[in-house]
Length: 319
Image (tube, rainbow, N blue to C red):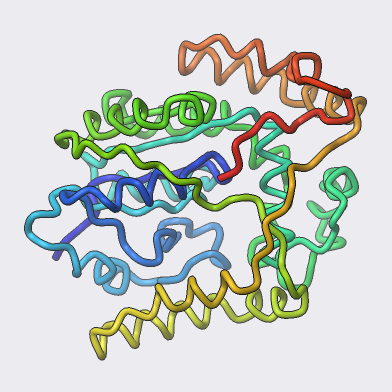
């Protein structure tokens, strides 16, 4: 049975969807559908699209003999406490790709994505941030939220802590860390680095369109219906594909896109931005030491942005 040999494990809203789409176009790469099966996130059962090993391995059965690099992109794995050790046990020599980002921008973008998907019902990000403690105690949980742990924005976006856990499981030579800033600035260069890491030849790709741009639902009620039924729909789609050979996933993506409206970038208050940076200060320092990159610019992000300080947190290329 075909097993994956590389994993994009996170983090959410750090360009992982774009990278997986670009890699999918390489003739030697196969990425399963859905790209985020979340199988190994045993502590996040609400996110799993497949829950047994046979069904999981079947996701990769459509890879051809020429597709030597077989992967998936479940961005819950980096945050999960159980996923990475389980991946190591399942595929000991797996190659692990991690994408990291300024945690302030990441948290803002994650909140916006959860609102769009119908898993977050508090539309104001600062309010949602201040609900973290009560939500940790089981209060104010949105009815359609599939996994309430992802409402803990500070924890989800503490990437230094998560990367440290990853290094405790996998050796450094099996890990590739990508800085979102680099990916935005030189997408072609980072893409080639990933190909080198995976041992693949350059396919001379030059076109890197924006993927997974910032959006909001056209019809919020439809968004809630999709959120409630998505796990069931994906499982039915997998069964239909296995039984008939017809792939329904492109049609499902197209249907979902009908309910999308692109939105402009988000703004937060100056004082709140500084409060968040203070909360992430130690974790940013840890991440900086782990990847041996100076990330001090992240601590002054509010000051270096052009225009009004009310525009803090917006120096992102949406993915």
